Image (cartoon, rainbow, N blue to C red):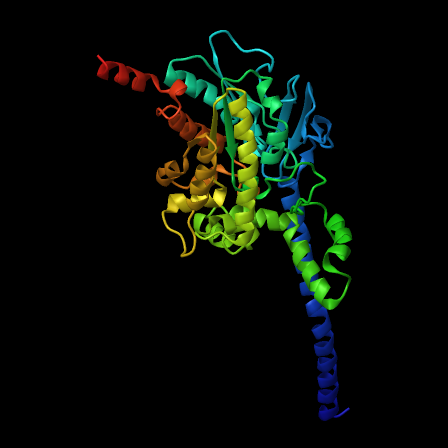
Length: 407
């Protein structure tokens, strides 16, 4: 064999190796990426999975609206929370107080509203209704009882449900009704039952379950549909949830990303609401009129408070926002609605100006207040309720000052 023949054989072998490498290297890279993705997904699943259910504690098919099962108890875990026990009293309310009677000489406030009021994702002793009992009693020098009547699983605390089930608020013998609501309650004002047109939520379920749901959602298996399917799958993985959870701890990243969402999600923050959000406000106005009218007929004062969303609280704290947005706008609009029907409105939004990073007191992706968030809301509410706006709850120091001035 000549030197030239040997070189030709080596060159041929190199070409075969080169062709083989062009096949093997991408496959190895793909396998490595897949293993990393699967490993990350398994790690994320171990921390950010939902467990338990409230199914045994909820009545969803009542034509008057959803409510809790009397004398029931359930355990459930949100992806970003710990396992929480939910106990409901004989009236189906998550309250440590009995609904048919109140302590002699006490002033009872009955709270109503959506999931944040019910304390979804936090222990009962950590929700702001429970915390208000101690705070208001101390500030007013009176015996205050705060009874939590909210039931908000599957949008059960919408204004329409509250209007239709208003008599449930009277059972606990209230001296005052405190209605707390947020942007979602305005958006979903007209939802009555879980069968209503509720938007599909981003439930972080198993990948196979998500894939099985895709065909109808994306319209078949065309290349365009599969591209959309890949996007939907990525949104529903635990890995994506974990990444969002940690990225959203950054105030600037979270607000910037939130404002990139479609109008249906972030439109309430705009200085000029779209036609769709104006329609939501009009529906909210109608149900607010019903709720306040029934409170007036029952001779019970109604006090309302707008609790900001996570992004809204962050923007107020930052003190700046892009042109075309105003985190105070929705508060101004619902204030006009509440007061136009004779109710009292407590404005806690300005209180977020001096709070550094209040968005950290919410679950980053889910958006519900955590235990610290409930404490934050309770402190702001206690201040607003005792500043003289509600005469029966005027703080003891304010009462003493008024007495001294009247001498």
